[in-house]
Length: 243
Image (spheres, rainbow, N blue to C red):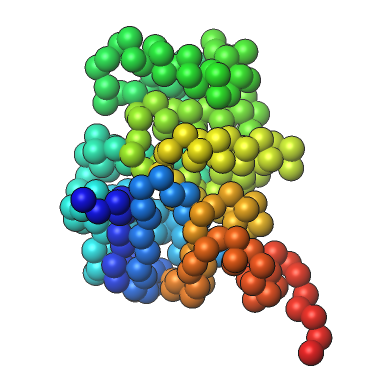
């Protein structure tokens, strides 16, 4: 049996007449943390939306657990074990933290397991336990990001997609979020991480892809890419040494 969880082949996605994704290939194997890095407008979020079924590709194929998902509704993909933490977090602001976590488990009917998983989320994110009865809309951005990640994990995903988890957060909170990302990965959760903070993303990931103007321009071992002069110059803000 193949250990490939997600395979994207020749994916093209268009908004009206604009080709946002221009024919990309990528794959994620069981247990991997793979990151997709690139500048704003590169097509990263569009790629995630196509994978999660919120955008329909103009051509190409997306295979999750060996089956094509093109045309499959997002809620069906969640039922099949594919969960996403969206850019901007998207928490239910007028619900409490506990209610948000319960919403993350809406596809499940094992009340005891749900209660146990809520306690597990509180162990991973102690700050959420301290504020369990607080309305999500009154929390800081970093706390909302923790809640969004915990809510996604409540569905017990086979593949977790993270879209810009560090966006708009303080440096201290960014470090905490990435610490959790690494811990979740060590627990065996397969992840695809879209992130503008290329340094932290490459340090955390097993493999990486670089996306530029709708195309994958580089792919390989994340640590090797972290030391690639071209990657460092383009995405880590380093000025190449003079010849």
